[in-house]
Amino acid sequence: MILILIMISSGVGAVLRHVTNQIISKFFTQSFPFATLIVNVVGSFIIGLCAQYIAETSHIYSILAIGFCGGYTTFSTHILEVYERYLLKSYKQMILYIALTVILSLTACYIGYII
Image 1 (cartoon, rainbow, N blue to C red):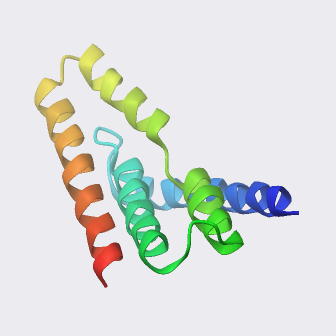
Image 2 (cartoon, rainbow, N blue to C red):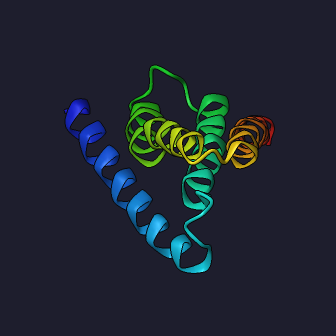
């Protein structure tokens, strides 16, 4: 049963990521991947909360951290967007994107963990 709940929650996370991408893309140009940055930072905050307040052996942890956050956040898209900036020789933007993702995601996880 828990596998089905993880599957459903990861699907919900993926759909929410898509919706978030659609909304964010209306406000920001496509030249910088703000949507992926935002979902990864928000997901890092959520997983920080889960790590602090929910036992890893809990079904709720599996549903939220593994399922929802796994579907909502996206490392592979982040890497593709970094590589695309490399191909375009947008090195400053590539480094900025990597730095922002790491710094903001770590900060969000930390905040989620300590609150």
